Amino acid sequence: MSINNIVFILHKPQLSENIGACARGIKNFNFHKLFVVDPKPIFPNDKILATSVGAKNIVNKAKYFESIEKSLKNIDIVIATSARFRNKNIKHIQLEDLKKINYNKKVAFLFGSEASGLSNNEISYANYTLQIPTNPDFKSLNLSHSLIIIAQYVSSIINSNVSFFKKSNKVKSASKNEIVAMANLCISNLEEIGFFKSKEKKPVMLENLRNIFYSMELSSKETRILSSVFASLGKKR
Image 1: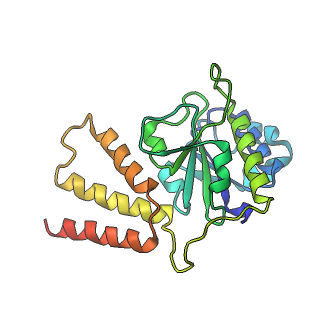
Image 2: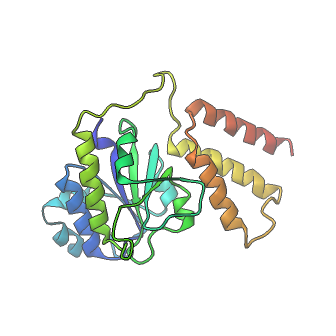
């Protein structure tokens, strides 16, 4: 297990102070990687750097992305944080379930904006949603506080002697980038045959398709096979 496999992704953060505090929390627990997706403030800026205090190196080395999809290019497992239980066919986990995650793979923790959190569309890119146990009558947590709780918990797991059930070394899990490419090929072919007839229903249909693909634990070989199937179906039209 390696701390270098862990990434913290902030999606559309609104406040510079929260971005800086998140960078500080990341460094507090000896992690290194921060991704920022479409932030509201200019990134980086002086307020972010000031709030990060001794974690300016985390901010300076952070990667900026325009979309979630691009930020997940080299990620294997995405865990989205949410205070709400989603009515989606996606695995909902608690903090203690993080012990079951294989940190030999590249794992990303995805956090939504302070105002609205993550939408169902954004959640659809995740393998799991994670709820932090709080007062049921007051579930709202500050962005940086949520990140710190998770960072501390994952750090304790990585620093312990936790073992995982292993697959054969010959079976390579599909990367998020491979799954995204496969899903996009499928969606492109469906669009060409007019599958999405209702514009109003299309966003929900896309969410459901991504939920299906992203929640499956596909191997690289299986992903290549499915991509070939979708490509062949496209050619036969």
